[in-house]
Image 1 (cartoon, rainbow, N blue to C red):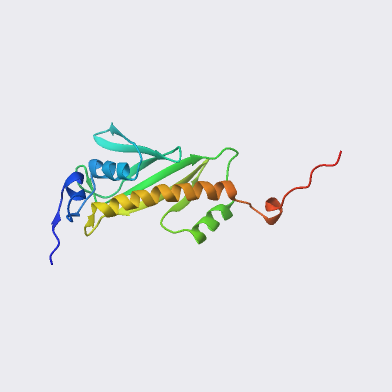
Image 2 (cartoon, rainbow, N blue to C red):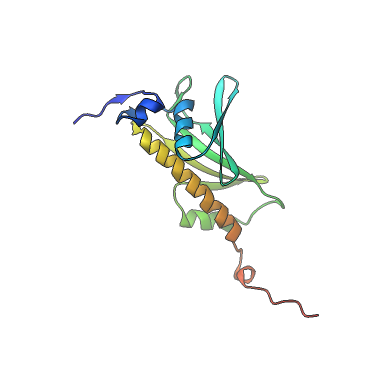
Length: 165
């Protein structure tokens, strides 16, 4: 059995076993839609940028290595979050990286950035790209829960006694 290596449109790739050799704005947009998210394309400096949201929080597609104009070997899904009150403890990131796979977290000034790479080098099915987008939305939800439930020390996690009057 031989596999076809081609550069199909997202619609034809979905209906076949043809392998994608690169990503385009159309392919990534269709995969994000397949994950249940809306997509807004924005033209900027001749490049189509994709913006979307999951769990009420926005994310964007950052294009990676260009193989030709408008065609990319990889992309990064990025969700920057502004942190009120400054810097989070390093243990927030360490705990996340110890317990999770697929996505990384970093701090850049007042922003915490959740990112996940999606390479297609060597050829992947459109179904793989669509499932990676679904995984991304799940990882985003898990990260938001991680931030919400994070306790920096055992004392912070313990319930506090009511103040005496």
